[in-house]
Image (tube, rainbow, N blue to C red):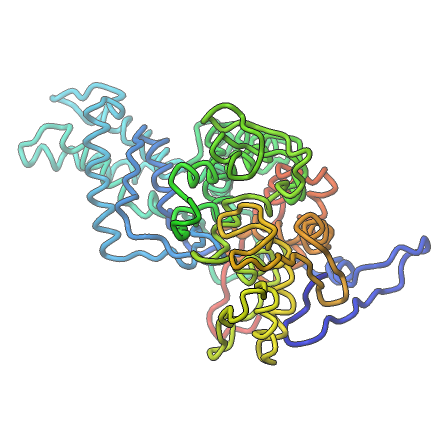
Length: 540
C-alpha cells in the first residue's frame, strides 16, 4: 500500500492471526465476511449526451449526434454518467423538444417508422401497432394499454384539427421522445421508503446492462430475454454479457469508460507549446493508440492489470517516429511489439496520457503522480492549501525539475502529499510534455527519474515505477471501484468497500481479464439489486 493519508506517516498493516498454514489474514476480509451488502440506490438517471446519441442511433438509425447541441454534462466520481449530477434545465428540455421533432420528421421521411399503412378512414389499428412497438423500444419496457391509448388519442386530435392521421402519429412519436420514460432510466422501488434490498426488474436490469456496456438502449435480443423473465438467471445473464461484448456497440466502453478513466478525452483540449511539434495528426494517432489498446483488452485474453506493462501498442509512421520506434510504412494504425523498447510498454509510455498530464510548457510530476494515485490506486490526495505556491523559477539552469521541486516540498503544509505524488511523477520524467523520450531537460539538466515512496520502496525510471504500481495490493480494487462507479451511474463510496473487494476477488479468481471484471460486477448484488431511501429524520 502506497498511501494511508498525506498528513501522517504510513501505518503498519495490522495482520490478524492466520489459518493453520500460516497465511496472513486481511482484517478487511474478516470484516466483510460478517457485513451485509448494501446495494445502494441510484438516483433517477437522465441519459447523458453520449447515451442519448447512441440511443437515437439504435432506435431510429439516426447518426447525426443531436446531443452535440445539448449543454455539457456534469461529472461525478470521474464520469459524466453519474445520475446525481445529471440535472434537467429548461434549456435542456427545449433542446429535447426540438431534437424530437427533427428526429421524427427525418425518420418518417425515410420510412423508418412506417411499419404499416395508415388507412385514412380507420387509422387507429395501424397507429396503435406502430406506437406500441415504438414506445416499447424507446421506453425499454412493455407499455400498458392505457399508455398506448393515450398515444393513439393524438390521431383523433389531428382529425379534429382537420389534419391527416400521420400528423397525429408523428405528434405521438414526439411525445414518446420527450417523455421521462425515454429521457430517464426509470427504476421503481415497491416501497420507496424501505431500505431493504430488492432485485431490480428484468427490464430494469436490461437497461442497466445495455447502458453499462453499450451506452445505449437494449436491443431486441436483450429486451426479449428480460420480458421472458430470464435475465436474472446467471447463465442467461453471462451469455448476454459475452454476446454484447462481441458486438461493435461495446466500443462505448472504450469511448466513454476508458475515455474518462484514462483521460483520453482530455487530449482534445491539450495545447502544448508550438515548439514541441505537437499537431493534429499526432493528436489523432495518440488518441487512436489508446483506444485500440483498450479495445484489445475487451476482446483479447490479457489480464486487466497488464494495461500497466503491455508489451505491444498501435502506431502509424507519425507516432512511431515520435516514439523513436521503427517505421511501420503506413499512416494506418498498426499493432507492433515493444520488445527492445520497454520504456513504451503499458499506460505510462503512451503519448496521450503523458501529454494530458503535463503543462503546456513543461512536464508536471505532480499531475502525473496524482493521475496514478487517483486512477490506479484510488488514493487521491486532499486539495492543496489555498496559499500553496507554484514551482520555483529555474534560477540555476543546471537544476532539474526534481531539485527545483525539493524547495516546494520544504513547506510543511505541502510536504506530506508531495512526498507521495512527486516520486510517482518523477518516474515518468524521461518523457517530455508530449511524451518524447529524453535524457536531458530543456535547460540542459540531466533527468533524474528515480524516486522513493513512503515506507522506503524505491525505483529508478518508468520500468521500475510501473512494476511498483502493478504490485500494489490496492490496484485491483481501485480498477474495480472505477468500473463499478461507471456501471452503476453512482459513486462507489466507502460503504461499498466490501462489495468492491468481493468483485475484485471474484474477477481475479476468474482470470483477471477485463471481461472477468465486467462479469463479476454484473453478477454482484450492487448491480442486480437496489433499495429505497428512508424518510429524512427516520431512524435506520
